[in-house]
Every structure is written in structure tokens, then in C-alpha cells.
Length: 515
Image (cartoon, rainbow, N blue to C red; front, top):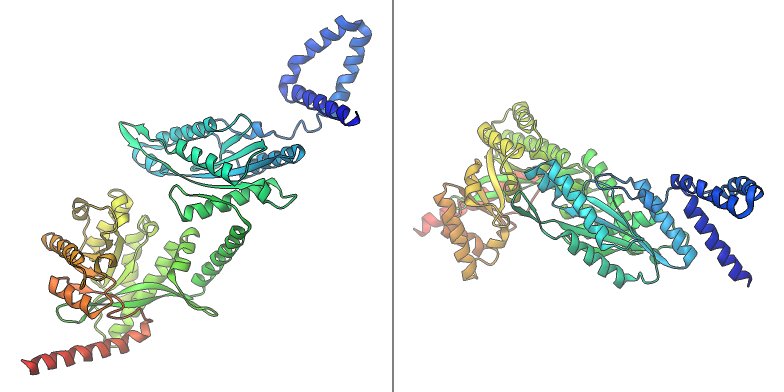
């Protein structure tokens, strides 16, 4: 009986709170006063008038605390991270009181930047509003969806009895389907993709805060983004440990860049006709004081996430030009050093001025510097600052290489729009070329196209004598790979180059004697 009364009192309390919360409570006051007078006359009216302040004190103490609904913004408005944490905290409290579960879902939308680039900011904002509306239409009445950045949305689910992993995966898939429905803008169909990370309250430790649940969903989203597009990931404690390790690596690699531990190693490129060194490619390497040589795959992504790719480019360029000048002084003939330029560097409006200044500082002509640009960067940036920078670097006299040719989406037309001097054929075309007829035909077609367009060619990833010999027979101009030489520090290049020159001289003497 006592439990029943307690429950009824709780229902009455919640009802009164709902009725008196916010400015809508003022609308009820005349009706309450009139009802009190009709039912009991002046005495009851006086009692109600005196009792209403007491009701507010007893039942509306949380009047100023924002509700989840009040934190869900109208389309076009942003919810802060603090607001998202407050929504999650309210959901956790309600779920704990009702012995139910809740969850936080974080969604990253890919493709909005492209819409803004081609159709303007207004079109992109309209699409953000449409995305939020689509999310809300997929959810239940008690679920809250809000936008927290230009491309990121957060969802906090109302307390529910069944919110296990399977249910959340199914909901995430429905949200993904809703968001990825094509949209027609100016007669053009645009497609978005969505990466999703979520955290169920049952996976959190007892007493975890709303901020913790939002952070867990954000970590799951980061994991999904590594496997995207259109990936879905659920948070786990193991993922949290991996995230912490990644954050430590992020801080460590930034220090390594500033402390000079990250420097270029150089991989030779040789001419297939003469065997002479035709250039070197500068490749970033991290020499860790404890772990030794760290693979670029382990730290380049971290530098990109930290926004340090431009700084990395500056470091690699300065060390490369220093090495080139030292080789000149040592009498080593290295015609050119090629440096990879990231998308962020190519978007720098002062890039060409900086390159010109660096070349002047080292006393080197522009033709001694090779600028390697990924095919995907050219395909995505046919106009704008990237295109202008590539064009101006070509006019300056730099040698432009189109890197990883064959793996992107550029057309022959886009090749002709840029001052490309040479294409670097991706290693996927080179592997087993001496044993695979289809590979040979593919390579012959690429080399024939390059010849007709007046472009030089360099094959990457050459690992065997057979691959080297066949590429030379097919007419590929230059080769690079472990079959020629592995990347090495600048001071080892002199010894390698002298040894390589001796091998070429021996081969030439052998050829003359055999003739």
C-alpha cells in the first residue's frame, strides 16, 4: 500500500512539474484561481493562492535545469558539446530511475563540403537541415537529435526496455539509409554518406556521466571513420584503450616533428636506358629514440589529424634541399629530389612564394625540385587554389609528377589541364608484370597513352630483375623500388651511388667485351 501511494505521489509530482515548468504555467493560473473560487469560495481561493508558492518550492526545484527537449535545437542551430552532455545526463538519470537503458549515437556526414563547394553555402545549410529532419523522422518521440558541428549530429535515445547491440545496429542502419537518400540540387543528384558510432548505457561503468557517454560515442565514431565511408561501430572498453593510445601517439609524433626526429630518407630512381640516377624521392621517416624506425603508416595519419601536414612538408623540403646541395658538393650527380605535397599544402596561397624563397636560399634552380601530387588531389581540385599552385609551380620550373597514377579518377582531359611532366605508375600495375600477361598488356596501354601525350613515365614498386628488364623493354623511362634500392638516409646516398656507378661501368665493360 505504501509503495502504491509513493508511486501515485510520484505521478502527481511529475504531473505538477510538467504543468508548471516554463512560461506555459502562467496560462493555468487564471483557470486554477477560478476553479478554486467556484469550488470553495474565498477561503479555498486564499488557500490556493498561498499554496502555489509552496508547490513551486517543492516540485519545481529543477525549473532552471534544461530539459532534453529544450536542448534539441531547431534546424539551422547548433547544440554545443556541453548541451549534448546535458541531454545524455538527463537520459541516463531517467533511464536509471526507470531501470531502463539509453544510448548516444554520433553521426558524421560526408559530402556536405562538396555540396557547399559546387552549389554554395546556402545549399549546404539547407541540406544540413534536411539531414536533421530525416534523422528526427526516423526516431521515436522521446529521442532527441541535434547538430553539433557543420557535419556532425548527435542523438540521445529516450529510456527503452530493448536497447541491446542488435537493436542499436538496426537503428543505426535505418538512420544511415535515411541520410544517404539522394538529393537533387540544381538538377544534379547529390549523395551523402554517414559514419556512425554509438554507445549503449549498459556498456558504461555504473555511475558514468552523460559526458562520458557522449565521449564514448565520439570514440566509436572515430573508429568508424577509419573504416568508412558508411561504417558503423559500437563503443567498447578495448576501443577506449586504443583511443587513449592513439592520443598518446598523436602528442608524441607532434613532439617528434618539432624535435627533428622525423626526417626524409631518399629512394633512388634510375633511368632504364642508361642505368644512371635520374632522381630521388624524399620519404618521411620517424627515427624513434626507443623504438627505432617507425613506419610512416603509423604516424602520417596522426600528423594529418593534428593538422601538421604543412609543417611536415616544410621539414621534408628543407632537409631535402640541404641533402641535394650536400650531394652537389660531394660530386654526386643527382639531377632532382622529388617531394610529396599534401592537399593541405597545395591549398596554401603562399606556397609558390615559399618554394621560390627556399630554392633561392639554397642556391638551387627550380628544375632540381620535383613536386609529387596525388592523382586524387588533381581529380578533386580541377579549379581553385590547388590548380593555380600546381600551374604556378610548373611555370616556376619545378618538375611535376602525378603520383599513384591508375588508382584515382582523373581523366586524360584533366591530365592535360595541368603542367604534368611525368606520371608515376602505381605498384599495382608493376607487380608480377614479368609473369602475368594481363599486367603486361595493361602496362603497355598506360605507357602508350603517356607517349602519345608527351609525358615521361616512372614505375614504382619494382622489386625484381625481371620486372626491371620488362619495363625497360616496354619503354618505361624510369624505375624505382626495393629491386633498385631501399630508402636510405642522406649520408648513405654517396656510398650507394658510387657502388651503383661501378656496377653500371662493369656491365658496360662486359657488354663491350662480349660484343
